[in-house]
Amino acid sequence: MKDLGVDYLDLYLIHFPIAMKYVPISERYPPEWLNHDTSVVGDKPRMVIDEQVDYRQTWEAMESLVREGLVRNIGFCNVNSTQIRQVMAYAQIKPAVL
Image (tube, rainbow, N blue to C red; front, side, top):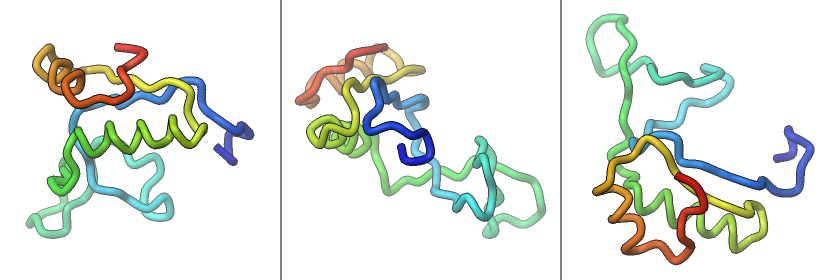
């Protein structure tokens, strides 16, 4: 938010329902969808999924941003009806946008 010159965001969205591994800005910016996985033989880029982070953890972290006053509204996109129902079952702050 410092880079944007704002004190809060009006809306923060989960754009895609898959957690990708963090790539430092110094290594690749923007990180894009494809990252190099050094454990794979060859030089073909591929999506590297972070299986340690689930959708609920991400949603709950976004709820904490609302509580801290850093974000006013949260939501998501590119999800199916099953994923929407799952979020609605545990969300303390309901999505403002789909």
